[in-house]
Image (tube, rainbow, N blue to C red; front, side):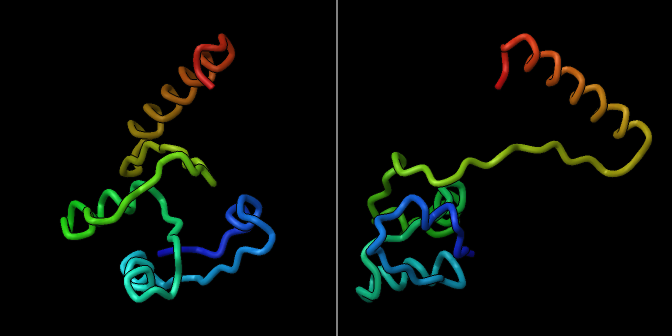
Length: 103
């Protein structure tokens, strides 16, 4: 869905009016009906929606407006082996960050 996020409001002009949409599809519908002029959404969500329903490819999308960046995670089923793997990955990431090779 689409959230009402303080980060979004900080990036918009003071006089911008926002409407919170319960879902991405609903947000696109509001565009179609002229209830809103723009839709802010996560790029990944829009790409997935276009894969699920190619008709959403008819909309123009700008990738230059960045409100927030997401972080990637590694998810494993809980086990001792998985915990060891995650500790190893975290350790390697820390080493790369300390060397300045990863931000």
